[in-house]
Amino acid sequence: MPSVKIPPVLRKHTGDQMSVEIAGSNVGEVLNALVSQYPDTGGQLFSGEGELNRFVNVYLNDEDVRVLDGLETAVTDTDTVMILPAMAGGSTN
Amino acid sequence: MSPEQAEQQTVEEITPQEAFTELDAGGVKLIDTREPYEYEESHIDGSELIPPGVIADRIAVAVPDKSQRIILQCRSGVRSYDAGQVLQELGYEDVASMAGGILEWEAQGLPVESNVNLTPAQRDRYSRHILLPEVGVEGQIKMLEAKVLLLGAGGLGAPTALYLAAAGIGTIGIVDDDVVDASNLQRQVIHNTSRVGTPKSSSARQTIEELNPDVNVIEYNFRLDADNILEVIEDYDIIVDGADNFPTRYLLNDASVRLRKPVVSASILSFDGQISTFVPYEGPCYRCLYPTPPPPELAPSCSANGVLGAMAGQMGLLQANEVLKLVLGIGEPLVGRLLLYEALGTRFTELKVRRDPKCPICGPDAPEVPESEMGQFPDYEAFCGGHTGS
Image (cartoon, rainbow over all chains, first blue to last red; front, side, top):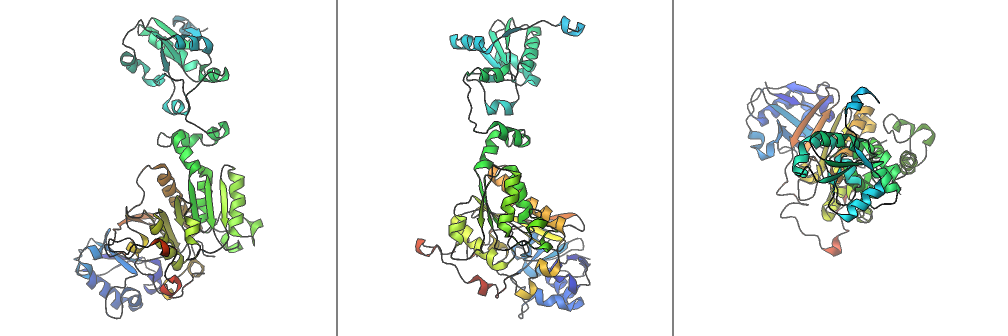
């Protein structure tokens, strides 16, 4: 199964797992399956209209899915889907 | 004299003054038998560099005529004497070694070609940089002339500032309106226990001044905003973004694209870090990567989630490394690449980041900003949902 890398901000919704194995033949299927398994991740990933939120980047291996076929991008069992939200941490107290 | 030495021929030794007189008269070949980095620092006009390790191989090309008068010279006269023996064994008939080398030459007040303005103390302090062929004296001078602005003297900025200061970055600006708190000291290694309660910018300045008096530290003990950002960043060559909040990150991006300033940008949370280098119009900008900020509830800070101190240090030093490469013009900066670091697995992952053709800031359709509106920026606090990050 493809593995999905979970960013720190979402790990509280995946039982602290940094990576989960999720079945699916394209990026959209994998992410939707992730949301059905861990419903609290949905708010970060998708807008009300079911589009990927613009502040979240999704990569298939090292490539942004937006330059591939978006949520339609085909995924194989050896692929890694990475969810990458912006982080701002630096000099915070 | 040992038997081994006795077997070898002696080499004629001449004083620097004698060498000068001969060179002045002409017809003499002067060979400098030192290493390239030494030659680069200073050398005698008209000399040819042939390092001692390769002199036996290169002399035939440099001096085809074995009856040619050759003066060999090194730093103190030892390597040139040895080279003289090598040349004599190869059949060169008229070889002399300059006793005392270029040190004695300079001590006699004889002229050298030097494009160097490092003091002896600086040559000593930065010798491990100067030894690197990619840096050398020239690169060290670039560092001493460089001006780097750090946004934040915190988890990222503290280690970055320490290493940039140690490296001899000549001007370091530090923007931070915070004071040192005891909870900072787990990772913000530029501060210390006795400075709790003092402004971070002045604490950082004290540490840097004790570490390296070559560095001029400029403190900005306020928060960057749309009214002051252009004035602050315009004097700098490179900006390091370790800001703790999204409004500042977007403001900095938009201002640095306008002024075409490269930005090295890292962020950290828990055990994870990200870093990229944004060079306007050469690669993507921060907005190409993240067109919009996350809503505040999805943008946790280190204060809420914690951060491993050593990981912050690693990301801060990756920032310093990017800055030094940009200053020196060497290597491959992280332009168009986002490097992710997971400290728990000790894993690095590299992602491609492309320029966004629809980027409202650096894309081809981005509106040109007229001079009169250069200092005007949108309301980033509202853009970022009022998130202030602290």
